[in-house]
Length: 323
Image 1: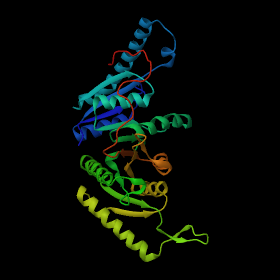
Image 2: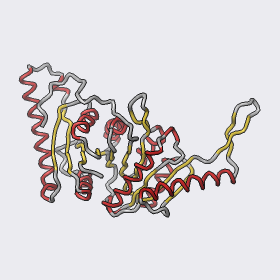
Image 3: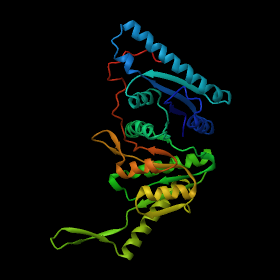
Image 4: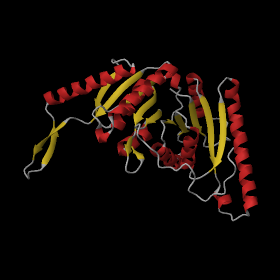
């Protein structure tokens, strides 16, 4: 399924990079090439009104220094047989620079370091992460947890009831990714659908519809329909139908409980496309899921999703030659 993985390095000088080790392990297990990429930019240089030649020389020095650091990070993984490429671009903002690299190199997977390091770091990281989720045209893996993927299990969160106009094909794509991770990690997958408590509507005293709890018979019939659909989806992906859970409640709370109980290392979920805005839409519930779950998260997009990030920078930046 993967031929190339792009890992966006936040700090190429951080030699203690656990997320890189995990991504490199995935690349080796999948037989994929690994691209290490860093967006280099300094507003001090960009806004300093330096002579063009001096600015270009300074930018080239920064890019080359960062590229040398990436090469040092790549070396041990190359020695183990993984094909590793490195590149640095002078661009801004960082999330657009990363998406532009995705458009250039066409990876099958984008991976980013989303580990939280202190309150301020968490706020700064969160904006870039969410923008990448919104704008990335390929599946995006947020490396949030220090948990070893090979010693944990997988949760594939699907929605056969197609809430929020989610396309039906997205569930199949989520489960296809789960089956692939199972194969390369020798892991097991639990297919989970979290639904709101079943409700019906009655006419209120003012003639307006009022939501009330559904009767037990209606709720059970709907549950069985959903379970049948989940079994069909799991079977089509080659996943055991026995590993299916239907839960009611708030998605963030339910998934957090499942992640902790099953020692889940990876949660795979979908992002709905807002075609009018050409961006993904997760909503407040999914944002809480991304914030609270102590596991890596793979976000899968609908096949028709197109990013709004232009292939060339819209910013007037004195660009160095790409390395």
